[in-house]
Amino acid sequence: MVAPSKFAHVVYNTHRYEEMIAWYVRVFEARVQHRDEKLAFLTYDDEHHRFAFANLGPAAYGEGDKNPGTVGVNHLAYTWNGVGELIDTYQRLKSYGITPWRPIRHGLTLSLYYRDPDGNALEFQTDLMASEEANQFMDSAAFNKNPIGEPFDPEALAARYGSGQSVDDLIFRSDQTESAGSAFHRKASTAK
Image 1 (cartoon, rainbow, N blue to C red):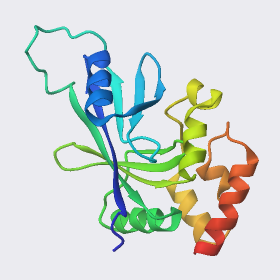
Image 2 (image 1 turned 30 degrees about the vertical axis):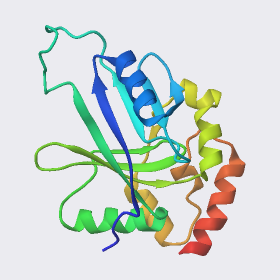
Image 3 (image 1 turned 135 degrees about the horizontal axis):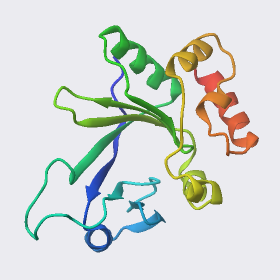
């Protein structure tokens, strides 16, 4: 079994979007990496993001009330060291009948989202870019247009990676440059 190499980030659903962002900026001395009306990504170190906030809009209930079905932790994220470890984890979990409900290529990461028996969401990811490249990508027009990313087929990825074929078009978003994918493929091929 390959355990994750680190805890990556937490995502919160909130009705207090502005207040939450301001609090985390102040408490963690964090900086905003990306922010629009629906999503904000913050970090306090060289990681592309440690916190994210999903804006649920104004609350439909009284001040102090809490609706646990909507606010709170959206998901926790864990990072694996490379595409190979993420694929190994995917195949191991699949052998137990555990499959991701949402595979997404975010651009800076490749991610598989799982739910535990209580329905809590966990993101298992691998970084596709170095910290500085990821920060630049988060500041790009492509990321501003689509901060979520695109779905991918983990079965196709596992098959192609296992046979040593290029996986660039499966792991990188369609709006990313070819050079990023080419550089990754060389690195991934030698890391197998």
